[in-house]
Image (cartoon, rainbow, N blue to C red; front, side):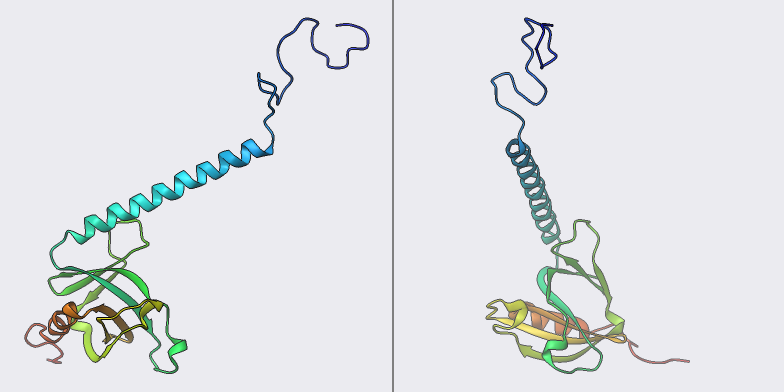
Length: 178
């Protein structure tokens, strides 16, 4: 080491100082930010592919159909007091309706609705109001589920089948045999 050499490197050493690449470029904030953006992008793409594969898998079940769901307050008031629409798939499973949220990653249903606790309340055209989407051909069904009120928005071709399924419960449904 020579007198006045402030780098502390041995004379004749070819190793670059810390933080400097062999070509003279440094590991500045730009390179690290780019790596972070790339990692987040790859992670987001992976989650999107996982959700898409899950949706395709669930839609292959017999009796599966596109269904928006929201819960209403028990006391029906202003439309603004209703919950948000949640997108998903519903599937008949005997005396149960299994609803799978589009944003859930697991294969299990987000909500299992027992037919014996369901009661049909109302049906209306959902054109344009469901989840803020243009939903021409959508029918909104209001159902009582125990102490809860649910709205299901489905394509018109599924609404009749869902209504019949709800109303055609097993014999003795709703009878208090004590």
